[in-house]
Structure formats: C-alpha cells, structure tokens
Length: 317
Image (cartoon, rainbow, N blue to C red; front, side, top):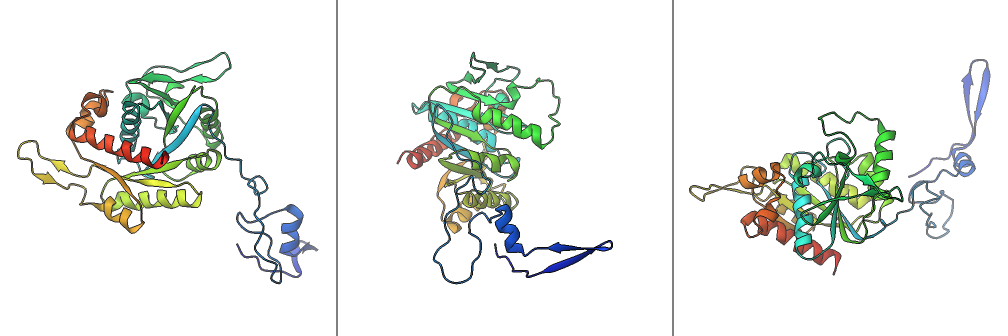
C-alpha cells in the first residue's frame, strides 16, 4: 500500500478549523501498518522488516489439538458436489488405514449429517466441556447440524453469532488423535473462510469444480484466496466430469469437456482426480450410504480412492 504525504490540511467545520495532521504522523501515532510492508521512509534503507502477525492485528495460526494434518475442501460455489466429495474423500482416507475426522464448517447449510446418516443426532459435551464428535463408517464428524434442532428451521444469525459458533467448532471439539481432519468449507470466500485460513495451520486445500465455465469462475476465486493467505493448493478435483449412459455406454459431457483439467494446467496445479456423473452417487448419498462405502470398486469408488491417494502423497511426502 502506498501512502501520499500530506503536509498540512485544514477542513472547515462550522465556524472552526479542524487540523488534520500528516497521514504519516497518523500511521505512526496509531501504529496503522499495511499487512505486508513497513511505514514508507525516504532513502534506501534496505528491505522492510517483517511485522509479526499479532502486530498487524491478525490472530496467531495454530493447530487443532489431537490432529496431525488439516486439509480444506473448497469450491467457492454451491451446487458442484463439494460436500459429497469431501465426505467420500474422508472415508477413502479412512479405508486406507488413516484415523480421519471431518468438520462441517457450513453454519447455514450443513450437509455432513445427511451424508453420513447422522441426521437428527446431537453432539454431547465431555467432562472438560468439549464437544464429542459423532462417528459413522469409521469417521468422526462434527457439524452445526449436531448442535441445532433437525426440524428444518433455518439458522438466522448475524456475523457475530456465526463467528462464535465457528470458534467452537474449530477449537472446542475433542478429536482425540486424528491423522487427518477434512474441513468441508461453505461456498464463497468470506468471513468463515478467512477466519479458518487465518487461525488454523492448514496443510493444504482441495478445490472442487464441475467442468463448466460458470463453476470454474468461482473455483478460481477459491484458488486465488488460498494463494493470498499462503495456504498450499494440493490440486483440483473435476466433479461430474462425464455421464456414461447405462444402456449404450456412450459418454455425454453434460457440463463441458475437461474444463477443470485445462484450468489446472493453466495455473500449474495438479488434478487430483475426476469423478463421473453417476446416478448411484446421488441415490446413495441421499440415503446416507456413501458411494465409497457401498462399492469402492465401482467407477466412482475408484475415483474417490484415486483422489485420496494423491492427497496422501501431497501431505505425507
């Protein structure tokens, strides 16, 4: 950020003159610094000193107690199957012998309870007043859906309440020794995403998108957001990549052809895998029976397994 030096300025307020000091004096007096630079000074005095996060008004990043690795699954856009990918990725990692948890950070529209057949169940607190995750299919889970009534009532909260709930989900859950915690991020690049990336030490992000341009526009915003907050992008997942007709086996690219692959190549990102558009994925997910659990050797099951293999290679090199 560049600041222009203002020598002296006056403003007329009623019948009085209000003195406005030079902008540099204001910056020094109130310790207002840009996020990545020191106060501009004249002359060549070498590189600007690194300002600690706390001095810049940013929280210290920290790990979650009892968790080794944390990965975020994001799409920055709703309706592309990101939560389904996140849940099946977590389950695929568990099938490979890892101790896995999934944290649903979507306060307004949690999907994990439905996908793991845990709808209607409530989380309890431990003797230390920490939330105890629910568990199914060998994966621990925590979600806003376990903390509110399952009666279809919307969460109509302002930002302060949302942030308080998010803090509880991030720092007050008793995970008890996980290899990997998968974060299912809500759509967008707003307060929730920023709070997570600023407060947690993330080992990487997975970007999910369909091949169509309208979804990729927001997926790219997600990539750029993680770049800005210094979170490594592990790669992209192309969801609903192709539909294979069950009668004639003809392939239909309903959402376009290889859009994610082309975007990943343009941005020098790896493609972690492609998941086909298959009726069974929707049918099984709606029943709370994840596709990777029902048939891990199916086309879609192998796709989730491939994504899990690639993620593990990235976070455990």
